[in-house]
Structure formats: C-alpha cells, structure tokens
Image (cartoon, rainbow, N blue to C red; front, side, top):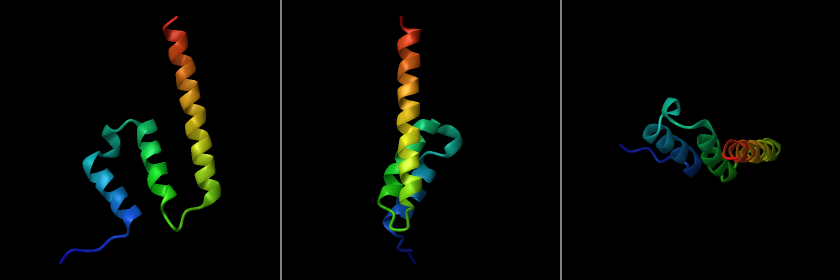
Length: 71
C-alpha cells in the first residue's frame, strides 16, 4: 500500500532522503526549504518573509567576504 502525501511534505521527505542534513551545505538547504515552504498551504507568511530576508542577508555577506578574499 502506497501513501499519498501532500506535495510539500513529499518534497521535504524526498529531499531529506536524497541529501541528509549532516551532508548538506546549510545555506543551500535553507534555500531549498524556503522554496518548498512557499507552496505549503499552512505556511506562516511572516516566517517565510523573515527566512527570505535572512537568506538574502547571508548571501550578500558571503559575496562581500568572497570579494575581500580575492582582492
């Protein structure tokens, strides 16, 4: 018997089975989880907005650090 899962939950489970958290890069995992969370009907809009802001902030910080390293 095969269980029918909702799409966001199915996506989370597939991702977790293919790429365990301890082997993943946290910033990449966060971006993928944000994409999955966006289509979740039970999402919290404020939490989603904060996650996106945090991701963008860290991405800009990493870009600045890389620019400084390669000067």
